[in-house]
Amino acid sequence: MAQMTGRMQELFNKVTTVVLSTATADGMPNTVPVGAKRIIDAETILISDQFFNKTLANLKSNPRVAVTFWEGHEGYQFKGSVVIETSGARYEETARWIEEKSSRAGFPLKSKGAVIMKIEEIYGIAPGPGAGKKLA
Picture 1 (cartoon, helix red, strand yellow):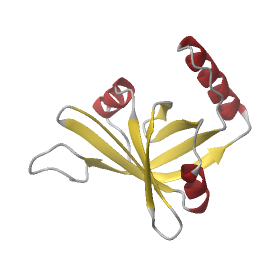
Picture 2: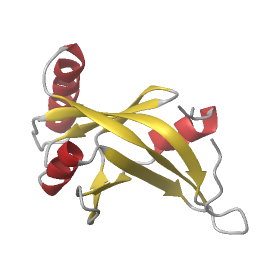
Picture 3: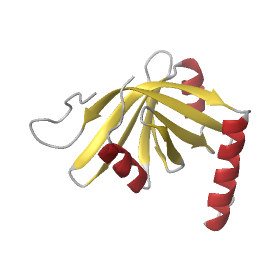
């Protein structure tokens, strides 16, 4: 597993939206913006599913994903695998978090599942000669 640095975690927490990329079992790509995300630990992130349709089908048939985020000229891409939790303590905590967060925003939502990503590789996406360099 690869681990995020403190700076990567700081930027991940700072950006409001990340890009989640999935693919069907036969490789057709799909990309969606995600705002309901948080860090579990240095090698694990959680994404809450409120709206996934094609994305959820992709995750079930092909659990390999990429999450990309940036601000200005700094950015990172995490690649790894996911599991989907729709019951249990972590899912229940995620459901409460989404309900509280969305109610405060005046747009009540319900979480359908907690998508748990184990980070296996980390790449830099900043422009320049190091673009696409594997960092971990």
